[in-house]
Length: 350
Image (cartoon, rainbow, N blue to C red; front, side, top):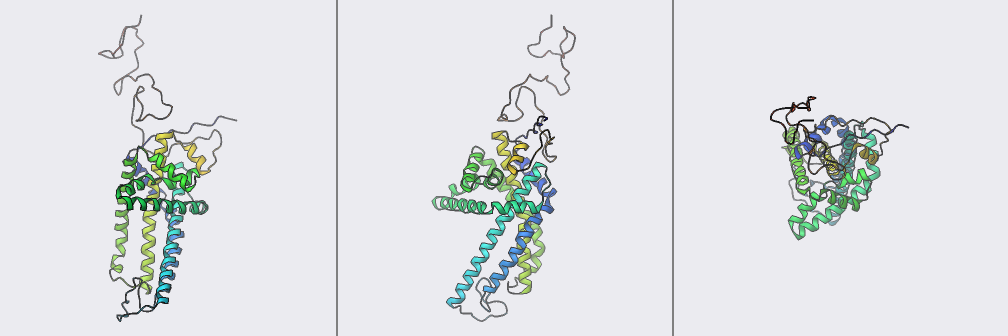
């Protein structure tokens, strides 16, 4: 059996490079990512609207105010209020579950794309469905901890947002439990919190700008603010929610996944074989694995200096490179230096 080919070494990325890689993965796999969101969010949003509209008392819109077709005051009974409360709660629960299923599916598809595998929306959703309970528990636990941090002081809550930013990728790639994934994320982010928070903020702004620009096409219809219990309002609300999720969920997953891989590269010498192992993608011994074509090229570096700092695991200094971009190796002539003035420490050979 032939020896397994070494995986190409991935190097740490800067904030701009992380965002660039995330955007490239998104744009090259947009159809798969959008399918994941549409096949989950669209049916869920239709169900949410049906449940909430059905729970509305006659003549009342979703906010509990008289609808446009009925300007007379409406008195809600306790029974009507209870039905409305249950309907809204059911809608929130359905949206919560569907949103996290789509999110987990996008994380899986992005990780496959990073590995160079063809991302399928069906297999990504099946994988996400198996891990959905853990993702939900993780989200609830992180939300409660962030809420406690906000009650104590705003700063701890902000810190926890950055510390837990790569918890979902850790859960999906490493198969960790919800609470272990939170701790794993905190350890990976330690020492890189500002970079993590910067990626989260800039990524959010990019997603928000994109979502706002494209959903502005619906403003003309939305300006009339039709009630949800009309056909126009029903369709508009469903379409706006689905389009918003299509644009934001894959982008957020791409940025978080690329950052997670980058943190592991920095601290653990992570490579594509380890990523394949975590995703359950089989690699035959001796299989050639090429670095992703969207991965930025490493800058030039000399042999006596590491390619980046801190050095990658296992790096040892090599012989110093001859200075100059086009400098030649030492001349075969024993008494002639390779260039003038001679390099430090050069002596004629005897």
